[in-house]
Image (cartoon, rainbow, N blue to C red; front, side, top):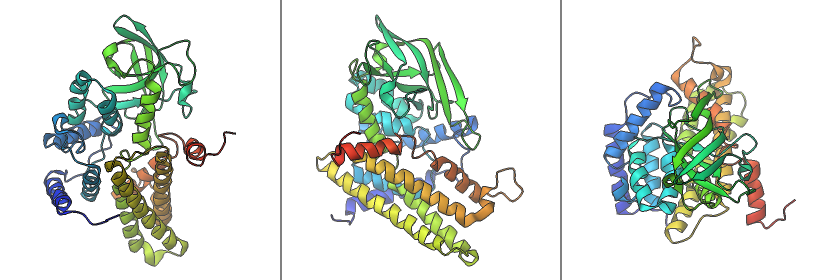
Length: 388
């Protein structure tokens, strides 16, 4: 592997850096789990899209720049280096967008991708149900065909961004006699449709980062189905590959967090009595770099015509557990002060960032498919071990 960047790639990095220096907000946006913060992040998405930076790997006709995966990784490195806001539309641009590119009709791409890229329409994910979390094949919510429409009934839960989002992409059982992964279809539902009820679910920090969604005789056109009827499982697995593989969690996210962890250690080192903390900081930094190198190798393989299969489960386990290690180490460095809440007298923005990150990291081994399920996938599909 040649780890040197080409002159073209270096020029691209400079262009990204200069644009971000001019456009990244000077003050941090409020959390996108609040209505005000959500609107601020939506406006940032529009700013990105105004110069085709919303999703650089997308074709130019859909608001992208036609960049390859190496350029995308470079963009992400500069994005996190600049401290740019987190992406409120990550369910859309990182998960649904690539899936829509692959399976959508020309009319569907024309209808949805531009609005997704611009931040005009923000997307939530609606897969999990009560009783169908990690076991997505146990989905019971139904979408029954009625002429040119589907009539949807059921419930989804743990839908990220659904409290303030505009749309949700879901898997529904379109064949009521089917079982397991058969008879499922991938359907888009506007969250302001008649019969849709969204109820917020508070996170550990008290903000509504998730929601449960109830569908009561919700009518949506067949146009909103992605792919053929009954192909929902295969399409969802494609989306899950994007979620667990390269797109959802770029290495830059963890490299930047590891650099901040090193800076925190250097500021606290004279007060540290537990010498094992130094080893923990070094290991987090090395793991973040190792993940970056692995991702570059995967990107190079994909650009050469290869594919990413079950090994995406390895990625998901690694980055989710790395996120926990980074933030647990930070909390150890901060000591009891790290647990101060915003209404505390000695609270600071730095403490809040680490505490919020620690809270969120706990969900990493659960979302995008629990790590226990990912280990089963690795055992069966990569190692060839028998099912229990």
